[in-house]
Length: 110
Length: 113
Image 1 (cartoon, chains in turn red, orange):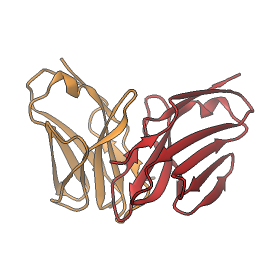
Image 2 (cartoon, chains in turn purple, yellow):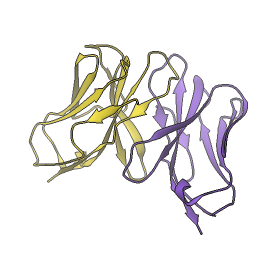
Image 3 (tube, chains in turn purple, yellow):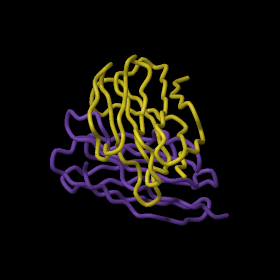
């Protein structure tokens, strides 16, 4: 699979903004997913980027730079319920399978 | 509401036992996947299937096999369970094509003693 790197942990205050970075190998890369996983639950889809640029979905935005092999997930107006693990996953062109990073655990404090 | 259902949330098995983990999806998806999730390692792909009776090895297939006799069901088999297979196992499905959203089951936490 691809090498996908993301920070292990991040802590932020309620109402703040947090940016979770993800880097990957660019060779053959096609698109990048972000998933959210609360403790003890299944991962759920947040976003998919295949083109360069920023995609906004409410409080969550995802950015992709294909040439730099870089993505980030931006969480705005943090709420306590945003405390979760955020998984970055990439796939190669015409490939069904995803390669996941180890996940970033975000803790939101009051 | 889309659904991927795994047969057990928690399992405890003995070393050397043959273990079956079952996964059923009701979305008529072509692709199905088995991952294991371990702290610090993230999700690692064990096997996947893009059609009935088709299977392909993922990144860590050793010690596992799979079966897909029907489109909706994808089974993971541990031929002879070992303690290093203690993990959280996640099943997922997605529609045909690359880059389609995967839907995950709740996971099975397997402990091998």
